[in-house]
Image (cartoon, rainbow, N blue to C red):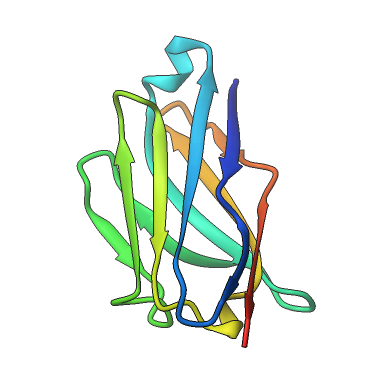
Amino acid sequence: QVQLVESGGGLVQAGGSLRLSCAASGAPSHIIRINARGWYRQAPGKQRELVAAITSTGTTNYADSVKGRFTISRDNAKNTMYLQMNSLKPEDTAVYYCRSQTTAGGDYWGQGTQVTVSS
């Protein structure tokens, strides 16, 4: 099993920045099998959507709405993934979730962290 804990959410004014973190913990045999990781978000009344993803080799993918503003990264030594969010907009307001998938077929989600951007 893998546990994911997000942190770094909060309230920020439009144009501001936040940095989200997602720390993975659990059995080492599961942790070392983590390959794909990603950040998702869900706004009230909307479906959960992919924000950004990163593979074990560092290849990244972003939703069009965040390209150029958000940066996903990972520190495999710390089992932690990050999402640097700059130039935040009110439409970025949502609960942000991290997700990690393993080569053994595991699919894990964090509990979510609220990001609120005021206009």
